[in-house]
Amino acid sequence: MAFEMGEHGVAHSLIRLLPRAEGNMQKVLIECLLAVVSFCDTSTTVVAANGGLEIIICLLNTCNTDVRFGMELVRLGALCFIVEASGVGSMISRGSACQSIRLLGVSREARHTLVELGVIPVLMELFHIGDTAAKLVAGNTLGVVVWSNVDYIRHVVEVGAIPLYAELLQGSDPNDFGKEIAKEVF
Image 1 (cartoon, rainbow, N blue to C red):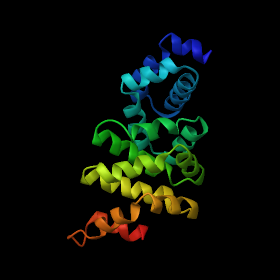
Image 2: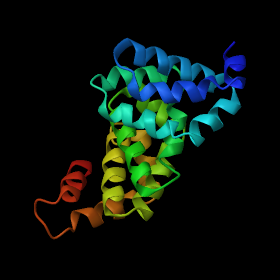
Image 3: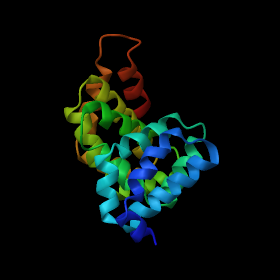
């Protein structure tokens, strides 16, 4: 049924309704959208082409129940879209996706899933090439997602994160947010 719904354009309607929904209605729309996207490749394109990733990321960043909403995303297998969003598009949208990953990274289950989905190379790329704000968000997110697991730490060290954190530590302002991030990581 989800495939048929996707083939008939339901994803576009759900994306249009989602920003105006609240509470249980919002949860039902999200579950329906994720089901349609999971079973219909056409729906994934519709969501991406109509600003769906930005809407979902915005909801995650503003939702009062971030952890519960995030666990719903983990359960329904939607984290791959957030990881993908943090690797493509403008620095602003990538930074927003990265902030969503940071919120989700608080949960052990989400951290494991995020790492399996390849979030480390995506965050490292943003840490390398991003503007100042994107580097801070990527560094902070990487710290939240990775530094609680020895296996993940080893991988991040191998791909060159330490020099990037050292750069943050060398900032000239003693109240610099980058310094705080680097201190916590080290």
